[in-house]
Image (cartoon, rainbow, N blue to C red):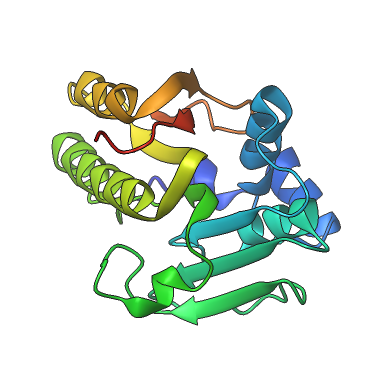
Length: 203
């Protein structure tokens, strides 16, 4: 017997409807908006890297916040079909490979974003492990390409690896905050780690 009718992800909720009304392809924009409001993430003129950016809601929001003098690179294995504005570049490719020269387009970056999540399998332990792997690879990119003083925002499925992920950020950033935005569905176990003030490399 199918339980599709009980799947909350199949029904548009208030956030989904509001996102569509405002021209965003996904409800995730409100998660970033809340994070921005709480930590004052964006300013005009910043250079922003959005890892795994498709379908583009986070990039659209960030591009508006940093305009007109900011620069944004949105990168994903899938094509990004939405218009991001004149200060943004969309690139199709591996967002997590430092061998991908496209990543360095506007480096060093003031903000690195990752709303990436694995394709869920239904096996919670496996999904959490893959989420942790994606998160840590995004951290590697942020550490390699983020400017001193820069910020990183990454999504992580809550698991026993959470403490390790947070500690990795604490070693390299001045402040680390854990935020679960109102837009996260009640059935989801995702949280966002927000790292502020990237420390300069040790001499």
